Length: 334
Image (tube, rainbow, N blue to C red; front, top):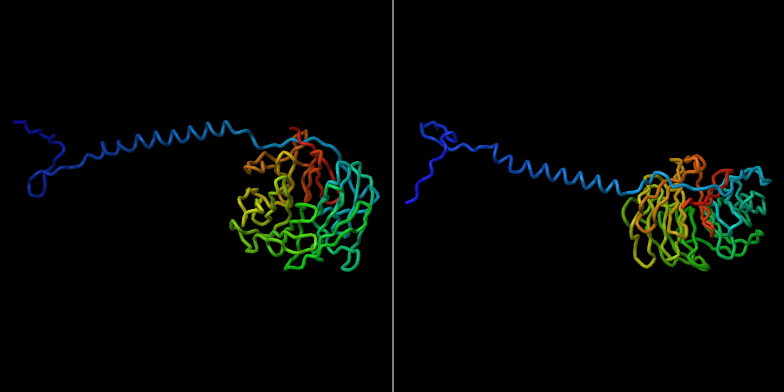
């Protein structure tokens, strides 16, 4: 017969009736979960430290100067650059919004041609905004308050006018998908629209203003990569909305932590985003949204990039920036 185990009398105390009752010993049960918890916390901290150490710094994105000039000192008079476009590898077109005109310079700042003026009829502009150049060197600009896209040769001859009549309200951004297809950032209607060369709407995305996945809020600009993916400067939502036109909606987003005034992409898939209110131009990997840093000059300063609202990338990889009278070009250091 097995001997009955005698319990430690220290674990008992008298009850009100004089008997004994068992009292739980808390110390031992507490130790059961404290040790694993401490080990788990240390493990998480270790993983985080190792992960952060392996991540390269995203503080600076170094660029070297290619050219810079003050447009008003080059014979054009005062210029208020809303946006800029690289015309080949040797010219820059500027949407001069205050004067209602297009101004074309070479990279030395020499004035080549200027055309247009403020107005609401004929060959005038009411508010020229987003500007681009196509592969043949023709220049296209969206007039926000005349709701149209207009195309010109480099001599200032108008070659096309595309009316934007389907509920457009103050569109400010334009990008070309092909010779006959354009994407428009319809700012006031909070949507992205694809239109043909006749102005007919082929598709639209957004239209429900807000921060949701399928929405935009005051989109200011957009660009298209070599695969046809569209990147939208979703201004009020402080992000870049990524649109695959073959899908029914936006497929992902890139957080900017600033209000993106414009967006451009280079041949290496790097997105350049001017954050005018913050005084920086941020750079992202377009494929995964990872921040590559903020542009700095060889001295490590972001000063040359403050106040720049317009951006484009030339075929040779030069990043062109414009704001007010100042136009400049920069090459990534790597």
